[in-house]
Length: 148
Image (cartoon, rainbow, N blue to C red):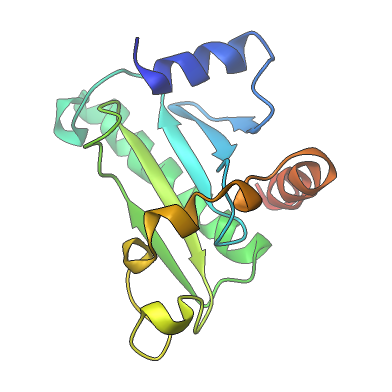
């Protein structure tokens, strides 16, 4: 089964602790791992692999909502820059990665601490110590929901 569909099913069953808000075309969730504080995902309600597979009206609304969520993430987490990506190589269900970036947040991995998030080693970005739960997770969700 599709990992994203599974996460959406958990939202519908009220068992996904990372769920923040339902939008018309997707679901806003806080990322499980928070190297970049405020890392958020927007999961499409339609199971398609590519943006161009969406019906035009839905696609237009979906892109508008991605922009709305991006702005909320930027404001809530005081981003210096937003990175917005839809990759889908691992989970081939349309979803967006929204990274609120801070100057120098890559440390030694970037050029003067700057560069794409993927320059950070996978093991560091997804280290167990970066997994967010409990009170910290609730605070991140509340902060974002306040702006959404």
